[in-house]
Image (tube, rainbow, N blue to C red; front, side, top):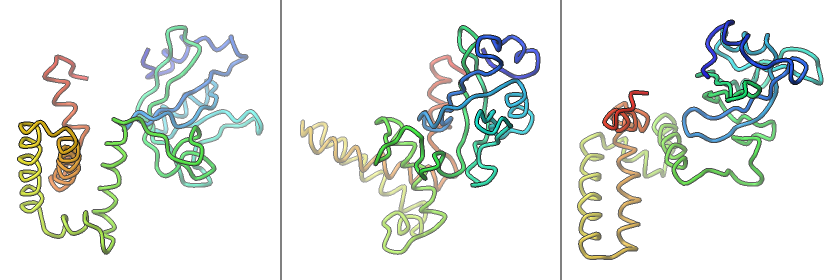
Length: 211
């Protein structure tokens, strides 16, 4: 169930773990699991009121707003209770690395672990950062410098090459050209001040899912 207010908070099964519930934090943008901690009633209420994800620190026995010292906060999107009311799913947007090891998630080892589809969201974030930073010797920077018309032209070129590869039955070229097409489309979306989330929302709406 969606947790929105005190009445919803009261419906949760707080007595099962002496007033604490495990809270699993998921990136609302790309779906990756970022971390797991614990919330009590006060932490959950504070999260809803402030918009910043806040936990109960069992070691310090105090409220702990993620990022209060590091600046790597978690902006709350929504909170859901599970079917038994004894676990929380926290949807959030991270500002910087979530883990104290300076990795995006607490479940990474020596490399970032991202499912295939969520990698597109990570790539979109990288493209956004490239537009902001404009690093030298970056192909993405050159595309943004050339402007929307040039980016749109590249999307058209890659679209034609992808179609030709499919018609020719060249599987390897189809994969490579499709990758080029997706990349340039993400750049074009960024240049047009939109992104994957709005595109997927349009697709969902067409399938009768307005949420």
